Image 1 (cartoon, rainbow, N blue to C red):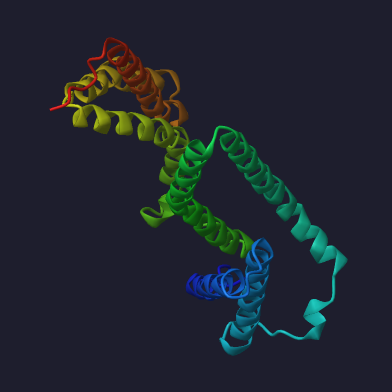
Image 2: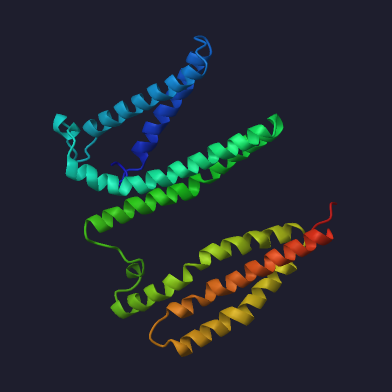
Length: 265
């Protein structure tokens, strides 16, 4: 609700309260009270309850335009149905991911203490790294729902031009070009790794090859063959990046097999 109102700070505060309470209660329940796993579970439940209470208090105190009363806690079938229609696929998706993590943890545990610890540490690192894309997901969801709910979808190109024809053609071009973000992220990482290994020429070569063989001729052919749309022309960039990815993977495997990828100083 707060994110939908454009306030992302308040939810952060609510979670911070829950985290602090969870740590304190875990220390109390598992330490002096010696409740073990039951204490850890109880600490989590109580801390989440406290976070909800703080959130409800925040809704009543902040000038959000929302009014909270007993009637708001009465189930409304129509509204619940609309919410569940959106929530269920997301819940199933997240549930499958968590189940997969549990299975991976079980597999790692059967390999022994060292392997189990290694997998656990890496999982925590990955969870921290995924904060960035998860934050972007929440941001895109909140901003998009605001604009779509108000019946005012905000075109990105509209921020730079009011010409409807330019916006139309630009939308076609970006639909093709945006795919490049997938492949570019891969060959960018390979390029950085090759440079760290003292082989920066590989990054130079795969970029030049992709430009000469795919990007430039692809853009030219698309502009000649599809005069009424810019979508095929936009696809030339990700096609070039895909070739770069293939070259990077091939070069990595070839040098890895020969043992020439890097030399320790």
